[in-house]
Length: 475
Image (cartoon, rainbow, N blue to C red; front, side, top):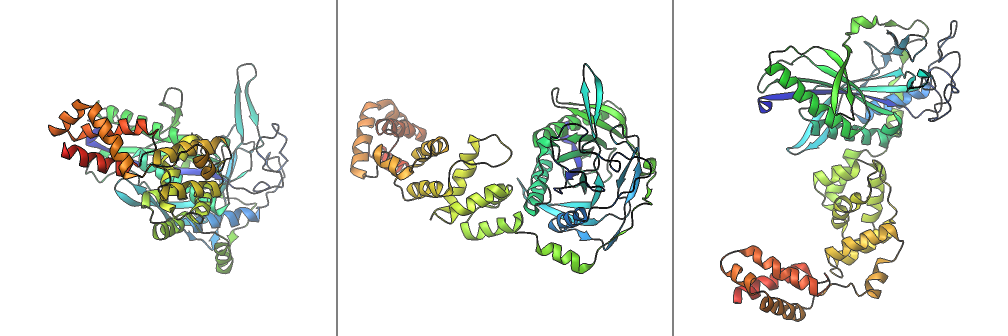
């Protein structure tokens, strides 16, 4: 039943901009301050106050648009979005409606079937709302510190067809924005949040189904879980003859389910109109070009360079460049070793297992990592020893070459010695030899494992495998 349908996904991503002050006033944007201490009459919406647009917000939004291949508007405006916001005192949000700052962009992601382009409908600026704090003793309390913190909202086209594609898009978007420096994209602090719009349709159908929206999801893992649950829920509902209602839903991380919050509003429900207190945003082409020159090398450009210079696969290049700190670290390692591809493999397959942080933080210096890669690449140590040394380096700042010498961890490459140990293992394992003669090639692994055990895991695995096959063939 599930396989008869496909999901159609579009994402709305909110990112708080890394300005020092709010979008329309001089209150600080520092995270974690005592409740209601970073507020003033403007961001509290008191009568008679007038907003003044923070120019840095426009600059940062334009940089985000350029980094995601958007067309930047020379003329845009700000609008009032009317809605009952319990955590936004003036009861409307200053946003952008029909003339956004950035439109018609895209980012490329890597999927199991190769590269895929995800369209970006628009990027617009707006102010954030405050925060509701629910407490059993005091009820619901309001913290207005976040009121007026500048946001960009990045609205994608409905181009994604799986939870994996949605996650890849979010990771690519986060990486791209992080490279520009316009937001810290810290999902745990709420500076990057995602609304998921999802509908279903029969495979091969052209028309979209009725979509639901899941609000304010703040981790990649929860986005995936929310999509998987909502897809299954909609398919089961349609199969029962039920009608999917356009609505806003909440994802509950504890249960892994989504629940109805309210019927989904349309644009006319918000009664958008131009904000009378704010002039239009007029940006010259020369200014836009100057902002573009400030943007550093972005993930896609870096990935292409890594593929060309270091021989990495598109997948590995995508994974490494997804985190700027990781890419910077890898590039330093790659510049100090003759085996950059080996460094990439160890980074992605082993090093990332040692941390569960969404941000790359590595206690191993690039110099020590490069030295370890050289030892492995020159066959001084085998891959098994390299993995053990990597864990050692993670916990202790030691010299890998000195450890190899002091603890006699060097790989055994001597063919005569390896052949002698293989013959001893063959003599001790007649069943494995008999199985091998019957065509069970996997039986050779028992002999290899025995030699590895005797040599303390230091035998050259390639030579060991070749010699084992040769000797077993002679038996």
